[in-house]
Length: 237
Length: 270
Image 1 (cartoon, rainbow over the protein chains, first blue to last red):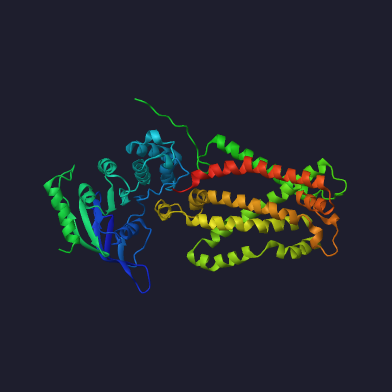
Image 2 (spheres, rainbow over the protein chains, first blue to last red):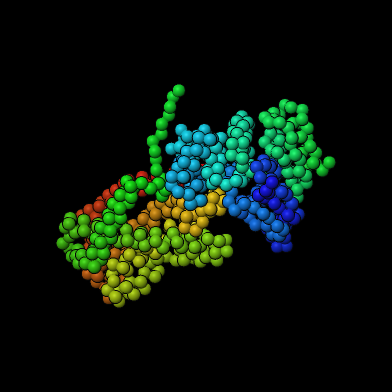
């Protein structure tokens, strides 16, 4: 199977003398996979995502990444002067799609995130969960094979998160996209991902495959064991 | 089931339909007319006036003149300050170099070099330009600094979104940067006009800056009428001019700035 994202011994530093935020990072993500990077704040997981998105470049090493991606941000990053519809259409328009296609894509993805009746509203008129749905629809409208999510649920309350996990999995199954998500919630990673990469201090400590059948709930014993495995890995055990 | 419908609210910089194109054409025609009138006025200024024989018509002509000068200086300020602010704020290195320079320049009182400006422009009989230039200098920094501040309020995630979604160059400017600075351009403009009203009173009384100048060299406007009527003890003319000036400022505030400030709210990041 084709691998759209491959890191080979990638390092990323910001200062001189170099302070490495990502060190000796090697990872291969398969097409159609749901991969989640977890780790404490400042461990370099968002930097890895930014490198996949093309926002940052590696200092050295080899990186194979897609030419264009859709990305969902923790702070939503919506444009307040555009309506819900406008925000989604914006991402499609930037890909130079024809107007008819932009219209169709906007309508299609707003339906997918259940926001078609909110098309004319502005972001400030929406709840946090609704804003993040707009963010997801906007990322999908790029029509890329790869969807990146940078801590997309960390600002939302747990009930909304549970709802969005389900919707995200439905979208993933419907679109067959490769999803790379960054999170610092281990439970979230186990609920969603096929594999969880555990990062600490800039290095990838371990990749844990999650083979539990979906839907996964936090009260299952195997679920708790997977979460414990991640914790154990981070505590250096 | 209750179906909620929302009125379609188009984004000024974004939606394009035939109706909006027609509105744009209308705006362009209106602007062309205003510019033509302004150019005609500057080619044929009606500046000769006798302070001892001022009629209501002269006060109204003076009001129009002052407004033209302020408006021209403002357009010039906008045209210069936005690119200048974008240039200064373009990189941290640029900011380190040019922010202190801009800070020093804006601290220099405009009246300090007004005599030089007047002498330069009067050498070419460009009395109007001398006044406009001084108002422009007074206005420009009021827009530059808020816009630089506004550019720094664009959240990092929005800048990243621009990169990820391929909004680069002019498209980034048009879809992200320009709307993001709208509130700061509007608040800066409000301050610029306030400063402009202060300086226009001095800028129209050119004769005090011209060696051996006489009041006949002054530009007809609210500023010169205020200064000259006060100098000659013509209280009623002074009060009438002041009343017109206050009415004009209030009129502009209610009809222009208040709606614009309200409009600017939709461009603010949370």
